[in-house]
Structures are given as C-alpha cells and as structure tokens.
Image 1 (cartoon, rainbow, N blue to C red):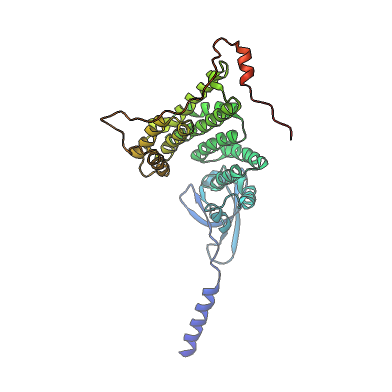
Image 2: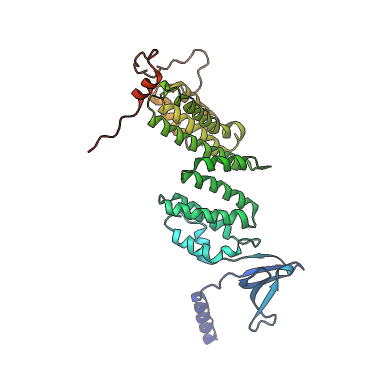
Length: 344
C-alpha cells in the first residue's frame, strides 16, 4: 500500500509540472456538431484541421469545405492574447506587426479576432510621432474597412481613418471623409460624437495657426472672415456631442472642455465660466471637471450660475491700435504683416 501511495504522489507531482495543453479551436458545423481541433490552414474553399480520432488513438487531418462550416471559435496563442491587453502599444508595435502579418489573411472569417488586434496596432502606429510609422496605419485601416467580417470593427476603422488623415495634416480629405461618414444611415452615436471631436480638433489646429500667422487678424478684412468661420466651426463641433449625444459623458465632456480652454486662451472669461459650470453640472465625474473647478476658483467665480445679479468679470485688455480708418488697405495690410525672420 505504501508503494502505491508513493507512486500516486510522484505522478501527481509530475502532472503538476507538465505545461497545460494549448487551447484548442472549436469548429462549429452547420449540422450542429462541434469539433475540438487545431486549425492548420485556411483557404477560400476549405479549412484544414487536425483533430483527435474518435477512438482516442492518434490525430487525423481533414480539409473541411466552408460550405459545411457555421463558424470557428479561434483559440489564439498567449502572445496574441497578451497584445489584446497591452498597456504599452507603442513599445509593443513590433509584436503587433508580427501577429498582424501572420493572421490578417483570416480577417474575413467569422469570429476571428485579428481585427481587434489590427485596431490596436493602428492606434499604436498613430501614437508614434514618426510620420513613417503613422503612414503604415493607412493600409491596415483599409484592410479592416474592406475585409473585416465584423461590421462594428469596420466602423471603428473609419474613425481611425479620420484620425490618421488629421494627424498626417490632410485637412480637406479629413473633412470630406467625415462628412461622408456622418451621412451614414443609423450611425452609432458614439462614433458620430467622436467624428465631431476630430473635426473640432482640426478646426482648433487651423485656427491657432491662422492667428499665429496673422496676429492682427481683427484688422485684416481678408483674414477676419476666414478666422470667424473657423471659430464657429470649432465651437459647433465642440458642443455637438453634449447637445445631441449628452448621455455619452466622455466625448461630451471633452468637447465642452476643449471649447472652455479656447475661451480661456483668448481671455473670454464669461464664455469660459459658462462652459466650466456646464461641465460641473452636467458631468461632475468627468476627468475634465478638476480643470473647470480650478479655473473658476482661480478667478474667484461661483461654481454655480449666478441667479440674482449679473456676473461681473473684468474684460480682457484691449491693445491700443492706431486710427487707420483713412489708411489705404494695401498699406495697412503691409504694416500688419509678420516681420521676416532675423538672420543669426
């Protein structure tokens, strides 16, 4: 009896040291059968699998026509699964590239998760400041949009396409693609809100550049209309998520905060204060709420809208400008041009 107990103890120890078997794929047939197997290869016509014989002795291989298959539950390896949970996507970009190249031909087959990995790979490339890396995202985006079996992922890829165009400084293409995307029937509200934020950030970038290049834009009859159009475009896109998709806290609060910061930067404190209070009242748990509270506290303004007296905020200082009402426009424009850079 003692030797039997020792033998069982030894076997238990050996089994504990054995690595767990790799996860198996599940082939779901249209006749209702489910087959535990390992997928060896996939073509347009068949899926090649390896499975254990019904007798339990040995492994068999078979090419199964896709016409007999309902779907496949793919069991991906540990590296693939870990990348889906990556917290450092930019660092893991080479691993994403390897796994994408290995599995992207399977993207059209139902239940295959390579599209999820592709979306994360795209985000990693777009976070990279290197323009060459950002450019690599575009063909991956196109592959998901045109081939992924999952319609939700195809829509997510379109959002990333807009981000990629904006990051790569292609504003006209960004606006055209966004307009077409927003016209999509039954567009998901979260994706619509994200699109408006992309357009808001694009308008903010262009507006900032215009004001930098034209510091006296207020007095320039040719520049001022363009600047004001960009301003209204910026505010419209910033506030659309909160006005039309208010239950989506993240994009709604982000849009309000972006508009608030714009008014702060331009010393329009009454407008900034109104938006800060909207943020506090509508989205008290948003990540931008501390920013709104800090602004109101800094300027000693109430956190709730005043009801009995009109709020007094000192206006922004106005620079003295020469009286040029009689000055010819061409002379005035030349005077307001930015000075040429000084030579070192």
